[in-house]
Image 1: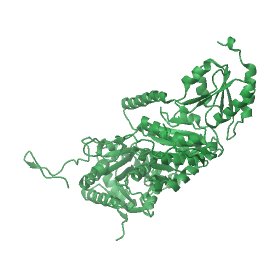
Image 2 (image 1 turned 90 degrees about the vertical axis):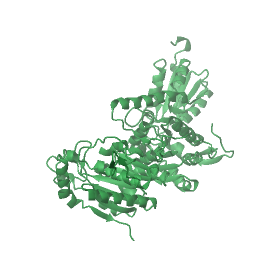
Image 3 (image 1 turned 60 degrees about the vertical axis):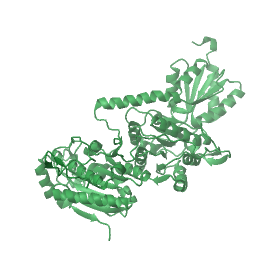
Image 4 (image 1 turned 60 degrees about the horizontal axis):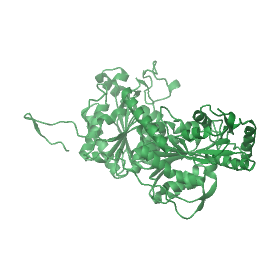
Length: 363
Length: 256
């Protein structure tokens, strides 16, 4: 549980996240400028040194993630942040960190793509974030904030999970959450305990074997064993699944959306309820692990599901896997930095309502 | 020196494995310089008594398994990223001795950016750079330091500057940077050369203790397997062909 300060303030999402990271006992940050997340680097270069945090602007995202690797291996609570193209450059390093079982926090303030794309908010990096992103069989722990408050809070959750499971964690935000100002009550300084890290390379004393941080296991038998350890970890991780269910009781249509899309859906839900359409909302908070079981249960009692994303349809694949063909799963999305409006979602809900199979006729 | 002359079966013990090397047969090819450089480096760490305060970084290349032999805490790094990983370690543990141990492909091709910027920041680390002008681990392909005319598996007719550019004297580049404190080029093909390298490593770690900046040691090396020569031939070839282009000696020494 996070202990908060008493006084609310007004902050940008990126700055709230950066301040929260310092309060979480961040020991090192390595980053490279890219819009729309540069405020994190700027905030930390201004504040970090005087609060005991190593802050270094790296020569590239490649260098940044590998500095994170080194610092994490040396036992530090460490993070980096970037936006979509920069996160792509970090994928090799994240694969190495997952294999070497090094905890860290990576913040992706998602912008529109593919390619250099646009600096406007998007959710096009869902696949990359949740399915591994780099080479090999691994996952990041992925948290999706939908408010500036959660930008701050999830820093604590992400570090706690990353360190408990010795796995990189990602906060998957977007350009709007990074840039907008909202009321936020910051977590208290120093309220996140540090786990012992006996595996860290801090210099080998005479009374222990040498510590080695590596992702190289040249014998296939050993490499398979490492993979089995990772898979067992991901199985345990399912206990950490987090989601928010809003007005799902008695709902005829279930909206599924995360992050900024979930806020748009929340407004659409209010508009639809005012028109007598029974709509509920499932907001996955952990995108990995994905709340498949909760979604499967909710699907039993609704007529149809509408997934709303700021991409061409990525999370909808996980929604369809969880629903497994029992209900129609529709998709509404905008791409390339465009944001769907609550009215867009409402229109789709109205069309769906007209086509709903009556409850007594459902299998 | 921790070596204490002891008597074994009536004979005086004058030479032994330092405690900073593990009792593991090395995978390096016969005649390869890596084994000697490993030993010299670990001898210095034993003699300085800093085994408990040293962290090494070995990236992709023949020496990626250095942690099997060096009895210290180590991190394996992605190809080209050793100096970035070492930066991360050193920034968190500024009172530890941190070194990276990199080959020519790693340091001077895929990792050129990290190499230059690490030295330009003057990170207080030691970079040991093994230059044998070839990619050993992947089977003898052209390296950034491959000499003109040199035959490798990807320059089967010899390296041509018009197509493959020129051998990169990255150590000369590093020496230009204000953050680089001590830059030297050494070898290990004779006992005298190995002793000089040892002195250079010792100096580098003493400078690191004083937070002087980046110390950079190139070791011009052979690769008998990659060059398709016997160990003796490869050392002769190295002296005849490598040394004129990569002359051993100091490139930058501290003033005063």
